[in-house]
Amino acid sequence: MRLFPKKELFNEDEKAKVVAAVRQAERLTSGEVRVYIESRCAYVDAFDRAKEIFAGLGMEKTKQRNGVLLYVALLDHQFAILGDQGIHEKVGGEFWQKEALLLRDYFKRNLIVEGLEVCVKEIGESLRHHFPYAAEDKNELPDDIVFGR
Image (cartoon, rainbow, N blue to C red):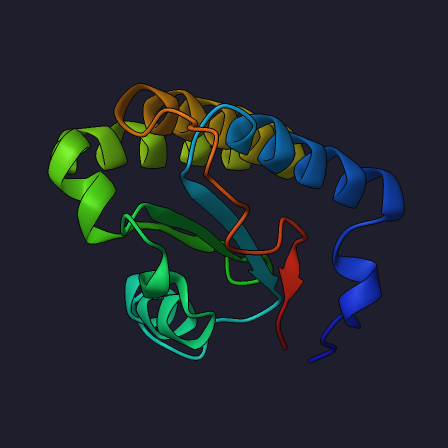
């Protein structure tokens, strides 16, 4: 079994598209979106891995508890979307299920980057609705993609 080096998971253009989607989504909200990509998921359930990553990235430390993590294990064809308490209380489980179905549809067509872009955009719109940008808001978490093992 060959694991792809981190730099091969996405090329520079693909990375730039996803980061641009995150920055655009965060432009009008105090919410935070992170994207974490790795080749393999060490857990049976990708949601368990996403919870570990969420805590490891300190995403629960945002002022309004409105961080969202999109986790993808490319070679295992697994993903999870995890929203912190503040945003989850506003949008509920149906919102996350809708976004998961959207991602799954794109991923089935091997449109990983496009799926992430659309999902990030929709999450950003929801964050903007529930957590609009205020003058005192600051970017609490980096916008770059995090590449795991």
